[in-house]
Image (tube, rainbow, N blue to C red; front, side):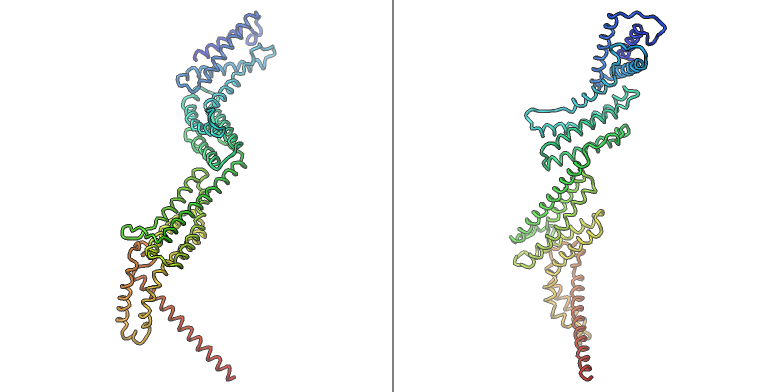
Amino acid sequence: MGYLAEASQQLLERENCLFKLQSPSEEVICTEDDKECLKKDYETLMDHLKFAVHDSFNLENQEMLRSAIMAIVQQEERDKLWEEAAEESPCWRPMRCREIHDTIIKELVEERLEQTNEEESDMDILKRDVIKMCDIQKDLLQVVNHVQKCYTDINVVQMYTQLYHQAFSGKLRKLLQCSVTIDDCKFILQQTNGFSKHILQHDELNQHIKIESLGALLPEEEHMSLEEQYLSHKEKEVETWLTNALKLKKTDWDANKKPELLDDYYFCNLYLDVIGLFNGAINEVSDILGNDKAQTILMQMGSFLMSYKNCMEEFLEEGQQMNITEIMKAQLFNICKIREYIEKQESLPHEVKVAWLSTLSELRDSCHNYFLSPIHKDLKENYCKLWTSNWFSKHEEIVDKFEDTLNEKIHTLNGLHCACQKRFGLGNRDISFKCFTSECETLTKKKSQKQKQKQQKESCRIWCLI
């Protein structure tokens, strides 16, 4: 039972002797000195009970705490008897041990979270107090594993959780009363999410906690406002980062800086910057706001691709740089990697993905045209022999010459990554086919136009006869 519970029981027996609550038929003799002495003993007991409850997190105090809780239950039962009794209760009743117990626990929670420094600003003090909340999990796990074993009819885990929740909410609301910067906004959201993730959803804790009874840490309107501020800032931040990354790359182009040659192909690190920026921002927002809202960050890709496309087109129109060929090879590799990244985004809406991939296809085609247009021009002489009388008699010779000429020009693709050649169709056979089909389409269009002109002339002639 423990000495506190035994002491409590002895005091209750003395109370029975002084008052006829338990034995109304018996005559009792109660002097003022007896009452005063019992009152002081009860006050001493109360001091011990307060100390035991206040020392709840001391593992060496568990037996005393268990005994104190038993004593509190005893005294609560006696208070209830006196409330129902017709006789006048003694001056120390009701003792309200449970109410005092709850008040001490509330004070204990506040003490364990309190940490101030006079040299810090108000905001720094509040942040330090909030960061101290990381000890909440440790405290609550101790309550689950040790403190609650000292209680019988009280869900002490829920009680402590409710008190920590209220204290944490109070600290966060005080932060909102200060001038909140975007860093403060991020900090508050991180702490709010951390409380839910690391405490309310903890495997050892959530089975003892009624989460729905705790309420929200912040009013919904204020929480939504913080989320909107943070998300808007992050979107602008990513946009700025992407713009700066593209500017740096364009500066390299304008300075005629030759791309790095890595494993015999030209390499562009822009895709590493872009993908790294997106992944970093998405992971940060996901940790704070959840994965669904984090995906909105990826929407900045659309505007970046359009800016990238415009920069590439301007660069190709100028076409004055000595290393433009190497730069284009590096950009094809970059386009390939960004395309792979977008294709892997399963949560991306279909129409958005299609639009972005279409922009990348336009970028790719611009690079293709840079490489294929000169080849088309050099093969013009070979095109002219297609579908002529010589074609039918010497087509093998013409085709051989066509391939020889093509092989002479294909060296311009040296340094282009093999993945780009395969993915975008820039191999020898691919180019042969593209050149051949392109010329066939041109000849077909010319033939169609001549046929149409002939039909128009014939119609005019018939009309004149009429």
